[in-house]
Length: 337
Image 1: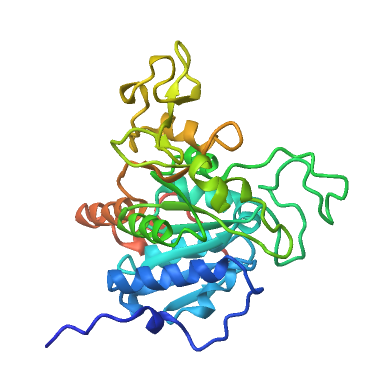
Image 2: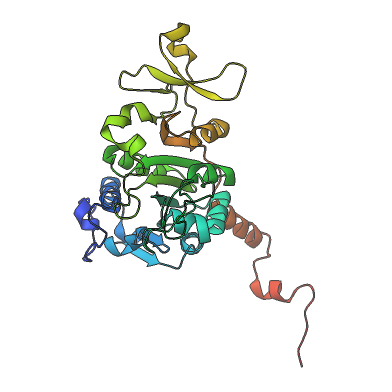
């Protein structure tokens, strides 16, 4: 037998017409995912995409893999069932800031803390796109929308900080238009064993256009994006002469310029992707005071839920406690006449 030749990205595309608004960031993410699957040689018959409700949740229709378009917020629960039933499957969850952090917040919390071996992609456009532009859990204060005509008064959820707070073992951020960066982050998420959470800043051209321009526009990117890499100093800026350090005698971050006040490269923070506290600090940064931290904020593997579950089952079998009939009839039972 000879190995099947690798599939091209287009061979991961389904025969369905892709229907998002012209200019939507979802197109770029779809292309990136297809390219990642191709470069990794992912078997289509062992790959599953599970989505909830929203614009992003059309994803399973557009890939020639297995897929489930489920109900609002419940994609993590369905994906957990798929993975536990067949651990050999490569399971991806596609959700949005509304689907994943509002009605689905509880499900997202538990799939991350349990560390089920899934890739969870959260498209964050800070608005409800499919239902016509209402404020979402990630919308900034002051956002005017049909549901907040005078401006939102809610403090927004920070998706990456939320994921870290639940105990997620892999948390990363990227942007829909940064194709090479997006692809690399998706590959890192796929390589991680356990729940991988990736927040993707995604532009909604109709209801929240240019909301991320403060750090995504070409003229702003160099000075407003910090691309973190494990073991490297946190440098950014057009001249690569700005960086982050801890403010003396505090646990607060500050932006400094190399050469000013005797600041040198050794004074800057070095990224440690295994440090959850550092990752939480990075997740809270935002322009204009700070750059937006992008890349793998946290990667610290731990045993997965599916591994632990199957190990427990084998342990019970080895101890002679694997008989379901016996389990059902032990302890207090009643006969109904």
